[in-house]
Image (cartoon, rainbow, N blue to C red):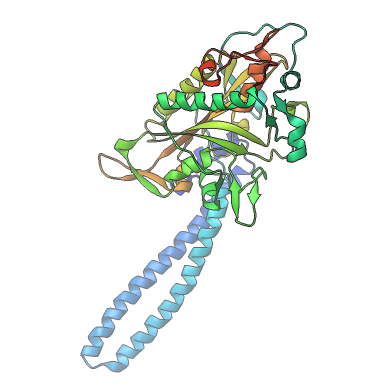
Length: 429
């Protein structure tokens, strides 16, 4: 969440940033935060003043008792008792104001970096780079869901029977390809200096709050009510929360972690042709990269992460483009975000396969993730970053559609050592 220091010292900048993100009633929301914060500070000052006065009077009592002036000492004791009663009133007001302040701040998104373009939605995102080979398919090219049926690779109907729509079964060589992609992405992350962790797939409320998934404003998380735990929508949540309530040393930054996990998203309100096949699932696999860094170096870290994701797509021989998201299309928590999309030749559309973001200090403030500066030992908030490297379903969709041949679906050379075959075909074992 935004810091009170930023809100109070750079109020107009914050309001402009929120307006750029198309946050409704930005001016009123910030004014309310400042009003409640002032109420909290006034109550805190009253508590401090009363405690100081009580301490002073308590010292007087001791002196009066030594002089045998019991009546005067008793009168001051009565005044101290009254002061203590007043402290309780102001402490209650302070606690209530703090709770209200937290609730208000949780409803306010991060403000965008200056490099974020203006815009209301996806149509205003800016393409900053394109690359990869252009696929040339015949008129009889099939979309991936038809290819999956042709070669018995993905059983969508069985997923509906066992669980529901959006939970497919992967069969034979496709199951092996899933494992191959996971291993390939993890190995590439290891080579780039990321330490692999294997996180839990459920998290508690504090973890969901720390990375900004809670409060769940859009109802996208699966909730295990009995134990009050949440299925993770991305490994970002458990991996970033490793550093919740931690003070790091500046010389240890940047910290680089990667993790494979299954991801679970309700995708409430999704329907239509754009969700067919692997285009949008409730459960899918993904490798995530996470960095914790200093404010001075975090944008260099972001550049390195973008280069890493782009390198994966080049090795997979996929046509891709990189978009810088506009203010109105960014997530609640990000300060800047780049989406990677791959071209799906049979569907003739771009499919998002990665979002790579710098959250600056927004998550770190919620997480209380800080570092100690080497120069003066001062404690500062870290910057947090993460990116998909990569999400599997749409990568698989593009690989299937772009590489279909009369012999089967060709596997890119970089993947063949991981899966042990050159084609997805009728020989599905």
